[in-house]
Figure 1 (cartoon, rainbow, N blue to C red):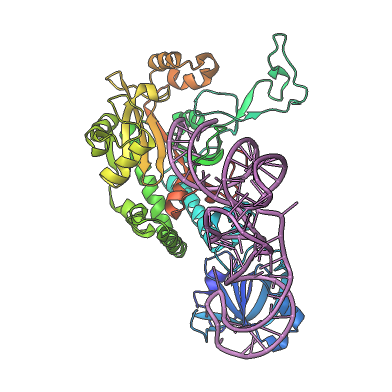
Figure 2 (cartoon, rainbow, N blue to C red; figure 1 turned 180 degrees about the horizontal axis):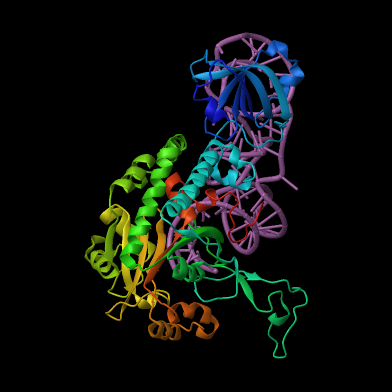
Length: 473
RNA sequence: GCCUCCAUAGCUCAGUUGGUUAGAGCGGCGGACUGUUAAUCCGUAGGUCCAAGGUUCAAGUCCUUGUGGAGGCGCCA
């Protein structure tokens, strides 16, 4: 791979490389990239040995295989280069039709050609970082004795209330079978009942945690919400650990440790990509007015996360901070906080994270009315042991809670929130047989990738984004 | 779903209070050069001004609707 050759350890050896040409300068110099690193290796050819026809075939995007001696570069821009003695053109790239030029393209344009955008420096860097983060997550959990659990993609439960679901069916949509009272007759469907794509693996993960003690899921999740924002996808990847014999504090510690570990991992393994992304972000922010630019450069920001404890406070304390804030007193918020019980809008979260504490914030103990049924009730009877981690520029990156382990309280909560208990006996069995304190959270993978890469649209950190009106590729 | 902004060459953009033949850079094509670094230099082609309708003597420019994109809000991860 080019990454290895660029270290220069094999100078003097005859080497073979395969890759795609980025540029061809002076009829002599091919910048070749194979995706192993953001850097290109320079191939030097003697144009006298090739006819014009062959030279014309070397264009941006052309697939090339080359053999030659790895030597110290005679030019200034690179340490090593390959003096080519055998060049094979594997696949042509018609320059009149190939959309990628050696120039800056807009992210919006590249999104329209998502099948080719991996070949750019920016997206190469993003997806190498994404890969590292993904691996780091598995390594983190594996090193700590967690069992990686595959929860179902197709589910019949609509219990979590995490959002609108995509229906899964093999019924003929042009001739849907109906029951006598005019409802869709799912008895005739593939699973003989209504099914959906999962919105969360949490409930199943809880089942696993009550046997393996520590489990995590890492898989795709689907939400059919009509969300048109730079932070939401209809198909995204989520990490959901679930730990038994653990409370909300253990849960927070685990989440903070995981986030720091994965960020540290990319700093150790993807520095060149991060440096490139940092420069990209710097260039992008030059277009913005001074007060909208980030205070820290990308890598500094990532190190800052590692070096500082996340600020932990309760919802009630957060409300007090917000009520005391100038913004609230001067009614600068669009939604002025009137008192306890208000749902926090993203402007409030952003104030806490970006203006007040200036670091990641973990908010805990939310009012029970604005949270899900399975969260453990506090002694006050008003709040639940929920925790959200808020990141600068991203907002909510983690949402979790200690789960209600007491069957009677859980049943009461389900009743209050109209969750059909009779369909969830399998879930309630965890509380009937050997119930124990447990907790878990969901980490939105793409939001983590967004944060680490410094990108601003979540559609740019997943290879083929799905969002309302768009399922191309 | 709601609010705001945008749509001109393959890409990135300019185009004045509505006025004659719509421009530039990059990219393409032809050529020169040959240790270049998004190479450079000379030449050249390239447009349904998003679509439909309207106002006007006259529309890239104004109005209406639609489509696509961006940002913000809500829902959340």
